Amino acid sequence: MEEYSHIKTVIAMILSLSVAVLLRGTVRFVQHPGRLKIYWVHLAWVFYLFLLLLHFWWWEIYLRTIQQWYFTEYFFVIMYILLFYILASMLYPDDLRDHKEDFQVYFYSRKKWFFAILASTYLFDFVDTLIKGEAYYRHYTWEYPVRNMTHFILCLVAIRVNNKRFQEVLVVGFILYELLYIFRLFLKEG
Image (tube, rainbow, N blue to C red; front, top):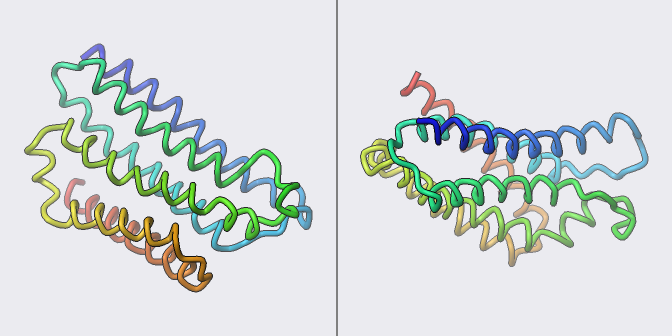
C-alpha cells in the first residue's frame, strides 16, 4: 500500500497543476477585463475539463484497491493525468498575441489538437478502469463503454467540423451529460 500513497501524491500534484492552470486562466478575465476577447464555448470547455478533473480524482480513489503495483501501471496513470494537464494548458496558452487576443480565434486554430487529446483521454480511461480490476469495470454496466466510445467518436467528428453551432451543441451536451453521469454515480456509490 505504500506504493499507492506515492502514486496518489504524484497524481495530486499533476491534477493540482491542471486545476491551477484553469483557475489562473479564468481569473485573467477578471484581472484584465477587456484585454482578452472571451468566447463562451472556450469557457464551457474550461468548465467541462474542470468537471473531468474532479471526476478523475474521485475515480482514482479506487486505485487503493490494487494490491501489487508495477511501474507500467504507475507510468500509465501518470501519462493519463498528464493528458489533462496538456488540455488545461491548451485552453489557456501563455500568449494569445498571434490570435488577436481572441479566444474564439485561438480555439478554432487549435481545436484539432484539443479534440485529439480529449479523444485519447476516453481511450486511456478504459485502460485505467481495467487496471482497477475486471469487477470494477463491470460495475459500471453498459453505459460506461458506450459513454466513452460515443465521446471518443464525437471528438473525432469535432476535429473535422468547423461549424460553430456544432461546437456549441457539443460542449453543452458534454457538460450536461457529465453532470448527470456524475450525479447518478455519486447517488449509487455514496
